[in-house]
Length: 65
Picture (spheres, one colour):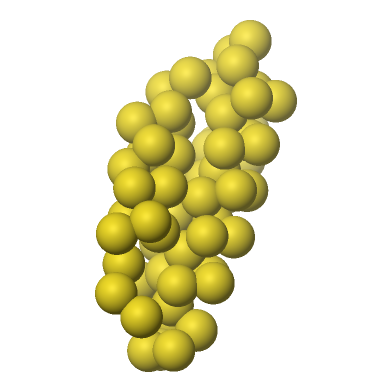
């Protein structure tokens, strides 16, 4: 069970380890995956990851190309 809670952490950290040009698409994909995870897990711990999903979406929008 504890390992399942690490999946959103790894998804949110993926843009940090991605090199230059691929960072924006990875950030958009990570925000999308994390958003879906928040919606699917809303009945349990999904809402705890909502701030991360929102901030990752903002980062994807504001990121320079």
